[in-house]
Length: 84
Image 1: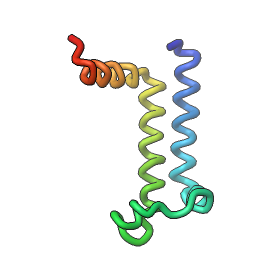
Image 2: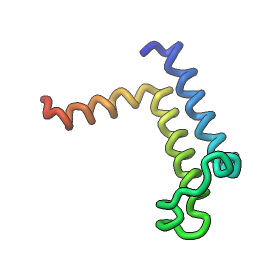
Image 3: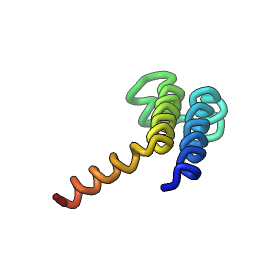
C-alpha cells in the first residue's frame, strides 16, 4: 500500500480510536450496555469495554500507518494456511 494512502488512513483510524476513548459516554448512549462486559467487568463494565475497544482501534491505526499490519496479517495467514 502506498504511504500516501496508508499514513492518512492510519491517522484516521487512530483519531477514531481516540474519540472512542475520549467520548465513551456518547458511544454508550448510541449503543447501550454490553451484557458480556457488564457480567465480566461488573458495574460500569460497558464503559470500560468501550475504552478497551478505543485503545485497540488506536493501536490498529498505528500499525496501519507504520505498515506493521501487513506483517501481522501475513504471518497470521501463513499460520492458518500452513505455508512455508
